[in-house]
Structure formats: structure tokens, C-alpha cells
Image: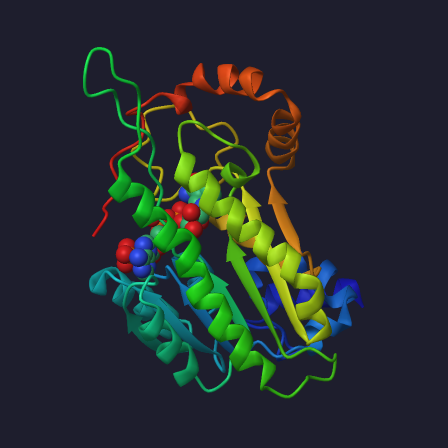
Length: 314
Ligand SMILES: NC(=O)c1ccc[n+]([C@@H]2O[C@H](COP(=O)([O-])OP(=O)(O)OC[C@H]3O[C@@H](n4cnc5c(N)ncnc54)[C@H](OP(=O)(O)O)[C@@H]3O)[C@@H](O)[C@H]2O)c1
């Protein structure tokens, strides 16, 4: 059976055994996992909503999931890049609806998510990052500007809530599938959320909040028929980090990240972590006395003030 699946994935544009299966032939290596787990294959993934679909991880997930018979609701703010994603998804046979807007706009997000015709899968990818700046005076200290702190919390934390909460509500009103599930929601956190990283205080805090909220809510959500997943990943090779002026250990290419995320979803992982050594190391660092961890991080190139580009706070 497994061999047959692999062969069929290699030969056909979509899974011909379980036509409602979420995964694309690009993720053929996933066959072993998702076909072993009948329940996820029984779960429909016909309608998918993705925030941050105009760049990086969200864009790659959209293109990977695009296929005939699937409707993609794609969100972002940059029209041109969002349309490029749409074009690529349409060329792969998906139906596409675009939403231009800010994830921090709670009312607009709620209206958008409620306007969909039901949702099988939601991927909350939109996010920004930013680090501390160099001291402004000779006796000053590195600092994170207030405007950046507010914007990172609004986007990375509130933006995820503005996506996840209406999606939970929409899904709760959907009938259960044959596997008893109504839908699936995945939010992108970060390994930065595992530690109190002095170089990116608000990003670490916002990502920690997302991960804790998703993981803590996941148990009850599952009883309601909704599977929640949080992605705790290290550096991804996307435009977000392209201008970082420091080496990025464990930098993962975005297609591999996408496959890892889809494999985690196929296994119903509540927390999807990669690379494992970085996440495990970060967990260990968080157990150290604060002064020791802070000393270490402050001596890392990534912890240096001014080593990350200033984010677009618009
Ligand atoms: N790259 C990494 O190393 C890394 C590591 C761990 C976690 N992550 C997380 O992975 C997710 C995807 O990041 P990425 O690396 O793909 O970055 P990216 O290439 O910069 O893409 C970020 C996406 O988020 C959207 N976005 C940002 N602010 C928004 C807002 N206020 N409203 C609506 N959309 C907004 C952007 O849309 P527009 O450009 O259209 O505004 C873009 O589509 C983020 O949550 C990020 O924190 C990234």
C-alpha cells in the first residue's frame, strides 16, 4: 500500500487514492506519514486560508498546496507580490481569492474570515521581525523603539489572534468530517519564542505568546473538532532574514520548511519544531540562570544591536 502511494504520487499531479488529501506531489515524501494516518486523509482540505501569502513561507505554502479542486484565500498587503502568488496558484489549478489588508485590523480580518465559505485549513504566517538599535548617546544602551515594539505585538501576536479566533468560530459551526474533525489551524511561532532573546525582545515575546496560546488551547479545541498546531522553527531562508548581518545557524530553505510543516500537520503535531537541535539547545538555554544566558546571547553576532535591518512599521 505504501509503495503504491509513493509511486502514484510520483506519477500523478495529485493524490489519486485520497482525492481530498491535503498534500501535493511536491511533498511526496509525506506519503508514508499521511497515508498511514487515515484520519487526516479523510479530513477535507478543500478550502485553505493563508495570511502572509505575498512572501516567504506563506507564499511557498500557498504554491505547494495549490491544486485543482482547492480554493485558496490568500492575505497580504503588497498587491503585486500577492498577485504573483495568486498567478502561480491559479496556474497549478487552484481557485484563488485575495484579501489585501493588515492582520492587525481586527474588524477587517473577522469580516474576511467570515466571508469564506467554510474553512478546512488556516495557516497564520503573517509576521514581521526587528531587533534592538545601537545606543543613541555615548553612555546610552541598546534599545528597541516603542513604535517597533507596538507594531511587532500588533502584527505577530494580535494579528495571529485576529486570524485564529474568527477561524475557530467559523470552524465550530462546520459539520464534523468522517474523522470527527471540523478543521485545522496552524500558526507560525519561532524558536525566538523559546528564549528571552535580548536582541529581539518584542519578537521573542510575541512568538512565545502565540506558541503558548496555540498549544494550551489545542487540547480543548481538539475536543471541539479543531486541530491546532504551532510551528517553532529556526531561521528560514526568506526575505525576512535576507539582510541580517550575521551568520544564521541552521538556516533552513523555505521549501524544506514547508515540507516539514505539512508533515507535522499530517502527524497532527500540536507543536512542529525544527531544526530539533536548535530548539532543544534553546530550551536548555532557557533553563540557565538569566545572567548566564544573557551573557552568552549578548556575545552572539545575532544579539548585537543594529545587526538586523529596521523593519517596515507601516
Ligand atoms: N524567516 C525566518 O527566519 C523565520 C523564522 C521563524 C519564524 N518565522 C515566521 O514565519 C512567518 C513568515 O515569515 P517569512 O520568513 O515568510 O517572512 P516574509 O518573507 O517577510 O513574509 C512575511 C509575510 O507577512 C506579511 N505581513 C507582514 N506584516 C503584515 C501585516 N501587518 N498584515 C498583513 N500581512 C503582513 C507580509 O505581507 P506583505 O509583504 O504583503 O505586507 C508577508 O507576506 C512569520 O510569522 C515569521 O515571524 C520566520
